[in-house]
Length: 124
Image 1 (cartoon, rainbow, N blue to C red):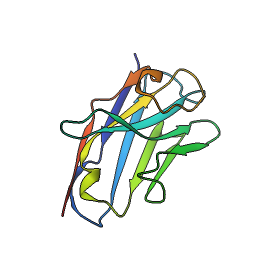
Image 2: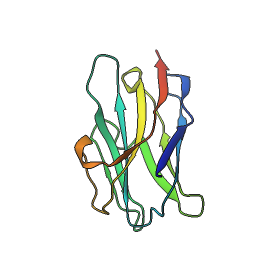
Image 3: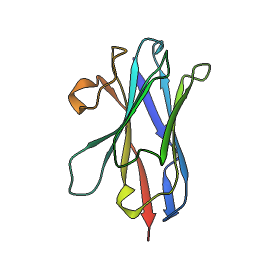
């Protein structure tokens, strides 16, 4: 059974940094695309970034481009999201997701597996 477990969320001041982790288990993810999404209170879940697990190609949403960096560690079956220059508007629950295909996607419906989410709060 596929399981995605996020960790690394917390409270940080504006301008600070956090690194989120997504530990994947239950199958080999070398032929998958992984994504990070976030959902702020009262808002719909939105796309943050996607990465091709095998090639490492990435696709970032405009609000985080230049501030967030996604990476993966194949040996640990883990995807990371390094978040720098955090802003109060980055406050949200962050979710890790996986697709059964290698094609990067930016829509929630494209993803087959989801983690439980981790809270990120950025204070001003």
